[in-house]
Image (cartoon, rainbow, N blue to C red):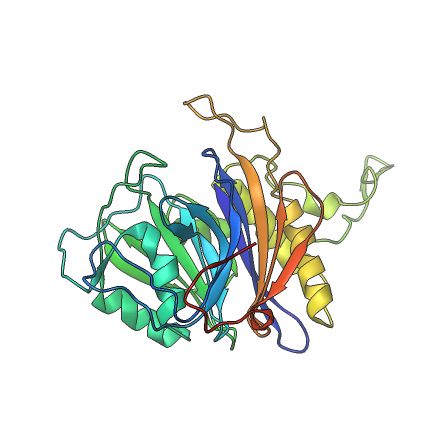
Length: 315
């Protein structure tokens, strides 16, 4: 379970932000992948040791895997769970095939804009590859945004590869994106304005305070409801003036879908909760994040670091 949004401010700074809601403990670490750090992929003969620098929170599974991040060209990416719908390729072609959990790192390491990302998905295979952390192949779909604000959502289902223009700026989990897009029609009456009083049988009936225009926003924690709630918060939020305000706006929008420990319990009797929230600014290659047990927002800019190293930078 996760929620991802894209935003921009009045000066065309673009941002992608996401909650990492998961029932497996990630113990995520902030990692910078410099240009000369050798990255090994499951179905590639050689390591990728000449690539774009990128950074993000990562899980150590023998090698560090990122579920989201930003690279030096201002491309941002995030992977979200897509259980019951993800269907991967069968064909393995050496040096053209990736595991689902490798997609974010490969894209950030090798591409600079959305057109290149589209070409990648049209020319590469993504195949089932067991990940010990979850005991199976992770079912994922992906969202990308470049420094110009161009953004897409990518899904591989039984219908094949589907690439959607990210018109709404929202992604959650299952069902498929087209279902969520259509479901918005059920909520087009919702707006931030108070409902006007009405008169019935000579009596005036007024709303019980402010917020009456939002009646009907789903309040549960399912992906379908979080999609609508995040969309309303995004669309009704005041457009911001600068990068700081842009990040603050993203914080408040994603607060509406934050999942406390204990609110969602899986069939394995584990808690699915918001382990971290990240905020990535494309235009300045900034990565901010907040962990579950802290209100502190930690900020990193890629140009703070020596990007020509051949070793990971772990913070």
